Image: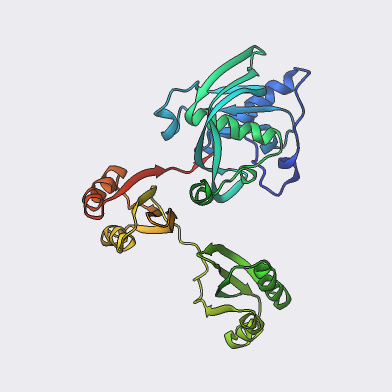
Amino acid sequence: MAVKEVLLYPNPILKEVCSAIEKWDASVTALLQDLVDTMVDAGHSVGVAAPQIGDTRRAVVVDVSKSKLGKKQENHGLLCMVNPVIIEHEGQTTVREGCMSVPDYTGNVLRAERIVVKFQDQDRQLQVIRTAGFEAIAIQHEIDHLDGYLFLDRVSSLKTDLFRRK
Amino acid sequence: MNHFALTIIGRDRPGIVSEVTSILYQLGCNIADSSCSILGGQFSMILIISHPELQDQMALSQAFAPLEKKNLSVYLRTLKPGGEEHPDLQGEICMISVYGADKPGIVYRVARELGDRKINITDLNTKLIGEKGTPVYVMMIEAVLNQGVEIEEVESWMTDLKRELKVDISVRSITPVEL
């Protein structure tokens, strides 16, 4: 399909709550392929959400299998996720995140360590997967995009957490 | 565009940031980078500011004189051209956590181990925590490792220090992930 331009904040599309995909037509398949193409073209990216390429439908792609961190952990390879929902989460972990839509800035973000996520795959099949570690973090980051959240909305101060927790 | 480093410190109370930024706003200054925090009972502000025209450090300093009357200490320094630019530091980032019974020399000894090996410390915070009778010293260091230096190597440098200072030291990698 096509490599799309990744929108940068303050583009207002990045702050929109995306709508569920009810009608599955050729445009959904095309959207998923565009997301994969854009992620692969970026080289270092492990996930892209539809609003990052200007489409406000609930679709994301994630693939941590080629990243340095992802290679060390079990993962599901390429995940094309339509209407993804996290139905369970447990544990907490802090990770230093950055985002293609917010260049030149990283922040410590608190994420669930393990999640169970429900979604429809590229073949419209309902999938429920349990995942942990880097893949779980990437999925949470991308699903946040669908709700208009950037990692900046979730940055936690490690200093404050450490020194003020009694 | 001229850049200045502005440092302000004073007994913490509500309104300090408002008073400082009011002056900056009226002068037409931009705040590029800043870090503000409470250290002990003191509120400290370090700001890199810029102004499209103002070059005279003295004139700028005068504008902050009212802050001195409000028990805030102000220090202004003119940056050399390019001094405002963030260096592009390549290398793995690591977090070194040091904690143990309070004693003199913890910061110096750990920093020396890193400095002697030309490891760049990019962030350092210390805090005294715990009970009055048994204070615990906590230090968090973020450092950029030189090419070819592994986390395990940093851990090995810290092994003797742990024994010498009787503190716990852990080293872990912080790999920023772009998602």
